[in-house]
Length: 111
Length: 114
Image (cartoon, rainbow over all chains, first blue to last red; front, side, top):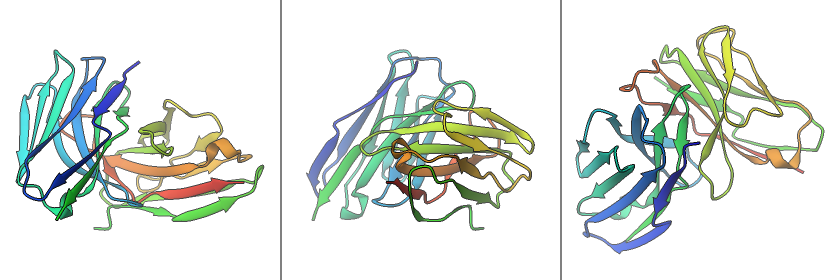
């Protein structure tokens, strides 16, 4: 059974810092990996999707990498802003259209 | 485009009551999903559908039922609610199961069973 782990569980950084969020998964047979953002009391917003054949994806200040063989992904956020404060969820697509989610990293960016 | 909409936003049920959580998408997506998110935990798949008339179980289907009579709607039915079903429920949709197609999520329904 696929297990997805995110470290750290919580992170506080001062505004302007670059930061890295980590995601690891136990079964490398995945179709894709997605990073989501979740604001308190809200739904999930998709940030980046990396196909299993890709190594990374970029969107603005966000860059996500995927190393399928080692079961790892990182989300890099450049020049963090207070508006980046949210919980970031990593999810991998296994068979049967099932997304397996990690428990998230709660990010606080301090002005 | 409203995307994925869910009703109600909040609901409190007594043990043994039943209810239906509504989910509608206007993106003409074939695939729809129901997840639950317990406090401090990741989301888990309850049921999914690959098109009208076709549904299948996910990781945690016990205590729930679904139907898919149209492309747009995918209601989730709770029969005989139990405290263990207290959770936040998210509906999602995607165009297909191809690895390039991301899932789009609704805002969630927060359910408390007491």
